[in-house]
Image 1 (cartoon, rainbow, N blue to C red):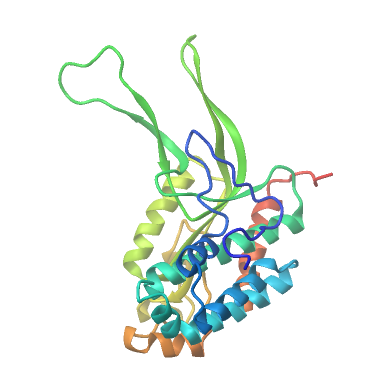
Image 2: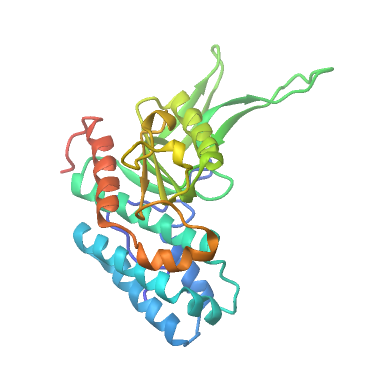
Length: 299
């Protein structure tokens, strides 16, 4: 098996940062499988491991996208058996499929930045409790104030960040400089959601506004499996009205059509697998975001 330790194309950096920008894992789905499967030999899990290894070892962007769609189909078709083989502890959509979606986004971003080969670009999956700097927090309460009032960095987190790691400095009036190493400057942020409806979009857009408040030149993209918006959110062709998701740059849906009700979700997931065109669009958007910075090619 290659579970959990599978290679990511170059430009992905899994460093540990004392200031909160470490990537939790470059292979969230692979690591999850490695932990959950262990020495289990159920046929559905053996097949899943083989499918994941093909997905993780794809060398080219074209081969990866084909492997991603194939693995998505395999998971959709075998989801009940996979869950049973794992002892029923794998929540099919909120955990199991969520990790898969995140790893798809990470690998699309890695392939995209590898093909562009621009200097210093990294792809990060941020862990729980860490994030990108989006402001400062002055920590005090009304009443007698201490001589020293703490000043903390405010952070916000999204699933996949393509950008640069740089040292940030806070300078006082002639006082010492506070330095924060390995902080991320996002070029493109990808928010991964199993589905997007009006409520989830509101939460995503709050994050986007927070990011754009400091990083106005970055691109914020939402990647979701399903479109769960009501009819009034779409134009005559069925596309989501782009005026409704500003300031996000774009919302991409991996599956065709509107999200079905829960009772029909597994059947419709098999019938409507991931689309290569959506993965290609994500790859193109990340490429556009990086190229817009006018970076010199890597030597």
